[in-house]
Length: 516
Image (tube, rainbow, N blue to C red; front, side, top):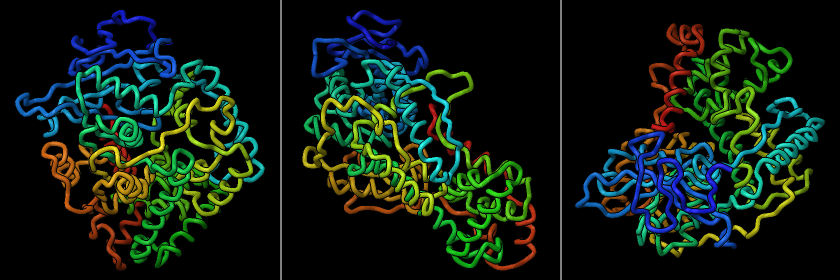
């Protein structure tokens, strides 16, 4: 298994250290980063047994005189999947926080250059549908069971040791290796849950912390997925209300309920007769994903109008909006990262398929948009035969000083309620980004208010006196979507959605979180 070692021999150009890391090489993939490999136990219950190595990177503080320690960052899906990992320091390089902190990144166990965990690629047999019939539920469950079996075959002994508690222990080993008594920490997405576990286990070693786009600490992990469908539906309802206020432009209805009814009529029509290859499933994906992005609300409304009119030219826009985020298996791939499937098994999951099927029926009716039903279906953990070796961490908020939480109001991946819950648990100040569907804000989205608040805290220790709400990404300009009838509105609708505008926006939105 790549990344495993039984000794502390040098691997490639990177020094391996079990103790203080006093020798750093250059990262072979990016010379801007210093890198060392830190050795940790595969199983913390057997500290003298097999070892794995973690890839740790650093960019030194710009102002050594003002240096106040190290700032560790982590993002990505459960386990750090598809996150920046050891390249996180590049996101923060040359920002004000870089002036006073050594920026530290790491590939968590199971990812990147740190003993990567893989799973087999399994082709499902159930048709891909945003609103599967009851008769298809059993095959969906069988497909997920096959994914679990493939993950178990490929995961070997490593898979059982992929837990957030172990990643928190690894993080504390990294702290010790760096020779630091305390670390400051910036977590995005899964990194917020890791930060909360670290604070609960090693709070005396945590200095300042910012959790941006939070996992709900009371919903790990099944509730995290189902909350995504609820958040997507809330975005769709907000978009529908906006479009209803502009009935003179779009003609979809005079209020949110009427607009949703128009969408549902279109969904039924596309299910019977697709337009340009766009069927009900593609529409549901486009509506759910499109409603996330406030600047594209006019384009989404124009898409619904065009498809209702049977205009196949709108198909490209529909496919752009419907495409899921995240890397997908490529043709010919036999194995892909198995980190999400392993990490999420640390939570409590029902073994009763009827529990999932009942939720799928509910979500099919209430939350079909953005593939909401898939958030309620059985998961690999439903079928996993080996159980976690220890219970999940009981989170405690009294083990560290208060910090800062950042949460976008319309984030469908990590809903705002998770940020509220995390702020309540830790007594942190909550920064709400109003009317915004972005995931990961600080130093990513160009929101100057968020950047200023986080910087003031990390650099000077200044927290706001109260919770704060700041403006998010603007909705379409009023002149582009005037609420009254007129030649401009007719021209707007006649042109239909602009695929180039949609594609450029989505490309820039995704590029903002990519490796710098």
